[in-house]
Structure formats: C-alpha cells, structure tokens
Image 1 (tube, one colour):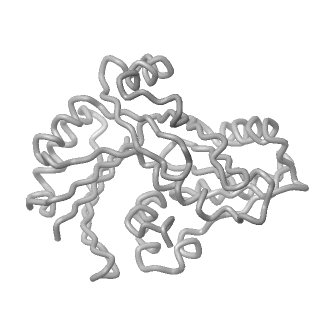
Image 2 (cartoon, rainbow, N blue to C red; image 1 turned 90 degrees about the vertical axis):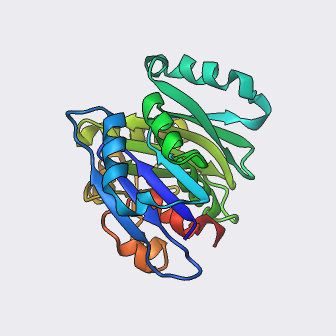
Length: 265
C-alpha cells in the first residue's frame, strides 16, 4: 500500500489506507481529539499512536474541515491567494496556512486553510503530503450527479460535525457554496431558507438534497417542510450503490466519496 488518507476535523483524526482495485474495505484508525490540547498536539499524539501512520507512503492526502472560499478560475492569482482568503477570514490569519484545490470542469478553485503548526507537523512526518478541503470531493460529486436534463437550481445541504455546507448547482454548473457554524437545529433552517429565497427555490421546484454525518442530517431533512421546501435525504448506502465503505459509521460522507472517487463513476 503506497497511499495514506488523513481526515482532520475539530472532533477527530481519521487515518485510512485503501486500494479500491484490490480491496472492498480500507484499513483505518479513528483518533478522537482531546479538546484540552491544541490541534497540533492532537496530531502528534494521533500519528505516534496509529500503526498505519508509521509506514512510508508515496502519496499522502490530508483533508481539513477549515472554512473555504470559492474563487472563479479567471480571477485567481496564486500570489494573492492568502490575502484573498484572509480578507474573508481575518481571524484565521495569525494561526493558519492557506492552500487551494482545483475543481476540474467547474472553472473554479477552492481556497481553504489549516492550522499552521499542525500542517507543519504533517509535512515533517509525511514530506510528500498534499493538503485538500473536505468539501472538494463533495462539490465534484454534487455537480456530477446533477441531471443534465434539468434547468432548475438544486440546493445541497451537508451537515457534519457542527457545520452546514450549502452548495447550489444549476445547469450542471456550480453557482454557490458556503459553510456555516451550527449551534442549534434552527440555525440550519435559517441558513437554508436564506439561500432558497436567493435562488427562488420553493416546494413547487427542485427538492433540497440533504446529507451528513450522524442523525442530525436526517432530522434536518424531515424539518424542511417548515420553511416550505421539499427534502430528499441522501442516504450514504444508497448514494454509493451499497458499497461496503458506505456502511462504515465512523466515516463521514465526504471521506467515503473521496475514497471511492464516486464523482468519477
């Protein structure tokens, strides 16, 4: 095995090795974060205590859930990426490092950041590491599954570990993406209602497609009728064609999509 995937979030760090041409299931380890120490300290502890992190890998992909910024390709200049990102997220400037993912065929890039100390630690342990946003695979998946016969805007909501990401796709093109911190269930309805109004979505048009991690996403889908929207809950198992990875409860949907390269199917 020459490839390691690491998913970093506020609650835990997941390590996984997976060869989809040889195995149906990955080898993986989940390390809960200690909230009383820094992310960097958690990274050190997780790497040292995880057996699969001790091997040499030719490819290491590290995914983070830090805030993102969608930038049109024609407006992107790599030299200005950090300034552009910190203009939108000034509180992150003192402690983070900016990276970006390219969104193929969408004429856009996704700027994101990672805690500077943690990213340096990962690079020390894994010199070949490349950094990505958790949302990159999701956005590719959302656009890929949009029906080309449709001309209506479709709103996707992804609720995972206290954050709601809303993505709008119309005529096969990415129109909007943003992530919000969620402190109580009403917050999700508030943010969805605002974006639905902006794109003229209502119960007579496209359904709102909801997915996520844990029971909160299913509950959100059930409550969208309160704001005059029809919801479709995207069950991981059905969306990923009942692949065994879809049944791994510790894996959020975004990690499953990345491992399976579902947007390429």
